Amino acid sequence: MHRKTSRGTEISFLERQAKLVRTEILRMLTIAGSGHTGGSLSAADIVTALYFSKMRYKSDDPTWRERDRFILSKGHAAPLLYAVLALAGFFDKLILKTLRRLGSPLQGHPCSRVLPGVEISTGSLGQGLSVSNGMAIGMKMDNLGSRVYCLLGDGEIQEGQVWEAAMTAAHYKLDNLCAIVDLNGLQIDGPVSKVKAIEPVASKWSAFGWNVIDIDGHDMNEILDALDDAETVKTKPSVILAHTIKGKGVSFFEGKVEYHGVAPTQEELEKALIEMEIDG
Amino acid sequence: MGKKMMGTVLERPSMATRDAYGEALLELGKKRDNIVVLDADLSGSTKTGKFAKAFPGRFYNIGIAEQDMIGTAAGLALSGKLPFASTFAVFETGRAWEQVRQTICYSNLNVKLVATHGGITVGEDGASHQATEDIALMRVLPNMTVIVPADALETKQVIHAIADYCGPVYVRLGRSKVPAVMPDDYKFKIGKAHTFSTGRDVNIIAMGIMVSIALEAAKTLKQEGIDTGVINMSTVKPFDIKTLLNAAKSCRLIVTAEEHSIVGGLGGAVSEFLSENHPVHVCRIGLKDAFGCSGTPEELMKHYGFTAANIAKTVRKTLTSKQNEKIKIKNL
Image 1 (cartoon, rainbow over the protein chains, first blue to last red):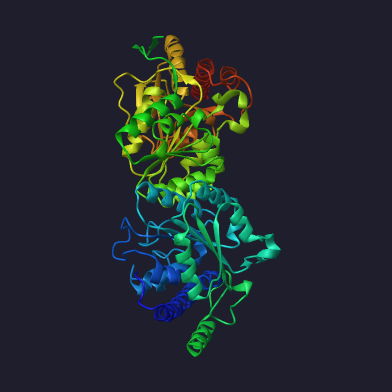
Image 2 (image 1 turned 90 degrees about the vertical axis):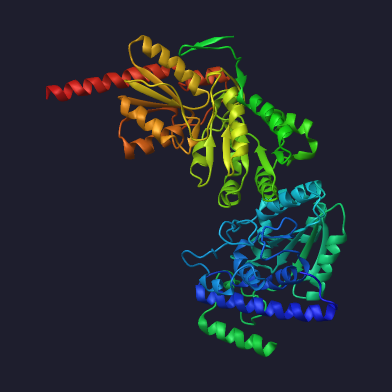
């Protein structure tokens, strides 16, 4: 993807795309009858910005050697990844209706063996950053200018392996790697601060040797600036701490822990679509 | 140093399989520039240090972080590299089991997990460092190939063979020296067992260090008139079912011998297959659902019954009781 001419035009294009992405997420989850709504909606703006502005890839050649890579370490946000990949042309949008069905390439959590565009199977938390490190090292060995983007959940960083990987990335000076933490503040059992506090997040990453960028994860302008800034920092990896709202975009899902792993009902879907229409 | 084994004199010296791995990696590194090696702070013990010294730009020490090492290896494979990731078997397969399952096997990645310090011959360090469940842990994973070479010659061939094979592989190597047992003209092939001889009374299916011990036991038993065969089942998965089936059909008793728990390893694999396809009496020599302990490797081998004498005793006892059973039935 290449940048549109003016930032203003680009932002409004991306905001429209993000709305489309959210609509597809809600539709596929409603048809599937199960899946992770909240965390798919919270990261929708970030992943939209990556696939429709920042990243270089070829949807008709998903294994193109020089592509940038996106690793969904918080694999339960699979509906978000699927919606974006479909809209980006990796596969037919009709396939979205098969989410979680027997025989579908859209597994409950992403599986790289069956769906083009998925770089690595995820779902068991805490493993994506290590894989991203390996890719970033490989790209450096081959002198490729490509970059790796890894999206983590805020509850996910309770996993110890994340911090093992954080040390490795800093040690090997992986400045072609950008991690993004979706700080939506909620995990299955409740607020992250109550289940097991992760704060102070910024100083933790900073102490591990990372360049830290703090943003509003729903502000397209801030997202694009952060992704550009990360690229300019040399000799250390960057992490974007994206403050988000779980369930963002649908008023009655926002900030509700109950919608972490529950799909919308048909009635909720209709209400949500009307709301998003009015909003837009 | 020559050792007479089943009629073939082998002049090759005893050597630890981990040392053969270090040499094979060097050879591979010279031949193929996409080989990268990862270790978790044990490169001196796993012998990947030799590769690190020769090719510093292709060696990554991930520190004491096995789970991260597995993920990093996966990422390197996805960048078109051929990663070999090494540490002690107990950490590679135990500490990082779920990473091996989710990231390597589920995605079916071309990552080679070559672990050293398998089994109780780790010795003095004790049970915390002795992998005695690793074969079971790796064998249950779909897409995984599991190989346990018997000596240095076979190890070298295994390392070259898995570099040419695309997919996840687990190789278990040992710390202690093992005698040369494979014939000089031996050619390893993934999934193919090596038959030293086939017995009409008993066939011993062994892997790793237990192959040389099985050969010794067979020599004793043959002298006593018990026709004994020995098979090196170095590929535990995928299993050489043809060779096993032929062996089982030709004899009265199958004995498995492994430096591993009798649960889920080679004995488990043999029993599972034979009970469904050709039920025959199977005796499993191995660790009897227990942990190891500290001691010299030689002491431990004796302590846990990983000796030619114990294998021979088991065979005699089982064949005699089977004979008595037959007589009893006849006299009913």
